[in-house]
Amino acid sequence: MNFPLVLFSLLVITGGVWLLDYLVLRHKRGPGENEPWWVEYPKSFFPVILIVFSLRSFVMEPFKIPSGSMIPTLLVGDFILVNKFTYGVRLPVINQKIIEMNQPKRGDVMVFRYPQDPSIDYIKRVVGLPGDTVTYENKQLTINDIPIEITYKDEYKYVESGLSYIYAEMFAEFLGEQSHNILISKEVIGMQLANIYYFPFRDNCTYNRTGFTCIVPEEHYFTLGDNRDSSSDSRYWGFVPDQHIVGKAFMIWWNFNDFDRVGLSIK
Image (cartoon, rainbow, N blue to C red; front, side, top):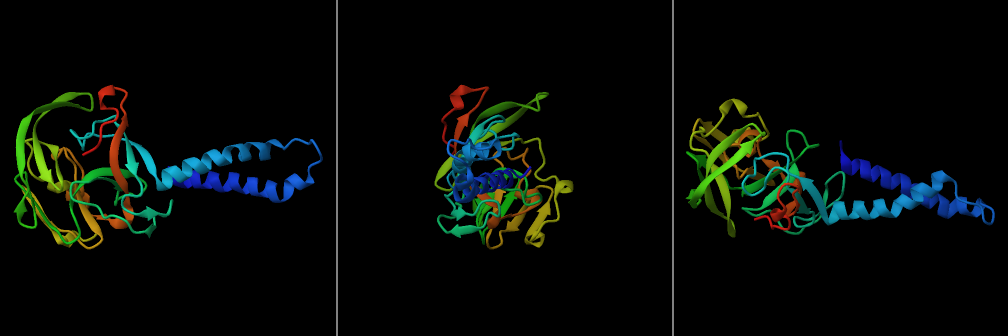
């Protein structure tokens, strides 16, 4: 369901009834005559919908993390807030940028519309900017021929789909202005070649069983999940166009299973 479109439609309907009543209907009612229900209810909901629509479209938007692709940074069940104006002000529904502000940086955790199905929102970490050469070979990330430093921290265990424990190694990765944690499973091969889509600018990438090299086209970004061996990301479905960007994730505002995560900033 396209929730922004639904919200916009409700805004137009309730706002239209409010405007119609203000300009025409109220002048036709007799003294003391009550508003009909089909006027009263839309007028009551209109300011609420207007506030929600404005905040959600231009300020911040809540999301729920549905998968483990960003573990250990984000856990399944985290409710997060996304800053909608960090990367520029965009018109709601059509997502057209009207005011330029900041550009995504390496290391940002970004929400965007999934290139294969724009009705779905994805969240990943930005690793490649327009013009970058991104290589991931034998679990080592390299950008523009410079290997990205990682430091071993500890073993990490989590439950996948409620069925089994997954064991991995946690590393600190030094990408962008600060470090963040990633998971690597040594037993998993570098690339699942059968899962690679044919996507726009696919010729910018070369693959083998241990990794890949991609040149990021202009106005596009390359993303990876922090759970490197359990993430569907730009390795498989391609680059994120600038017009698909939703915003920058910045805080966990709720988690029903772990209250200690409430209020954590997203790095």
